[in-house]
Length: 171
Image 1 (cartoon, rainbow, N blue to C red):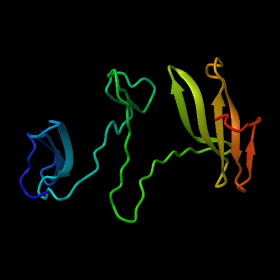
Image 2 (image 1 turned 135 degrees about the horizontal axis):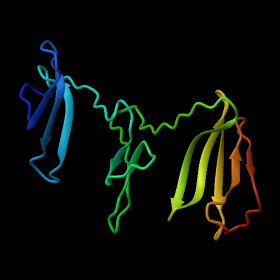
Image 3 (image 1 turned 90 degrees about the horizontal axis):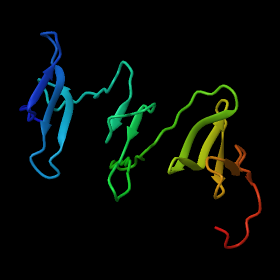
Image 4 (image 1 turned 180 degrees about the vertical axis):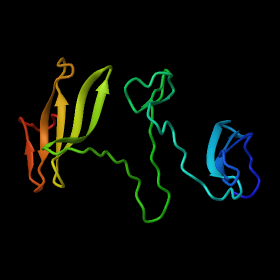
């Protein structure tokens, strides 16, 4: 904010009449990060979207190989979980993680895959063909590798179907 840029590098648009651009700098306190801020060069209180690969391509964090993922976050440290944190600190609003597909026949429109050492061990999927939808929960049995089977389904009407027999204390 304010009128004095604090970045070490300023990038401006090519035309003389344009004031939009970006500043790149380093933090002067721990954790000593580097930052990029897209904003108006004449009014630093006006922020703009920061676009990564707007013409296509993939983005990697923590690795040089995004593989086939649009965004790949990789943690190669020996200990500690890799965390993707979505936080909304505004009163009355929620944090949202949106998985949006475009299916026209009843099929999975969004999936959460749980993978351990390359094996898909569980999945939650939302199936839809229009504005309806159900949730399906899949699990795997030890020694089956990527072979996951549907364990439970919540239908659009609210009905619940559970596959198999669940005994007390089994979980």
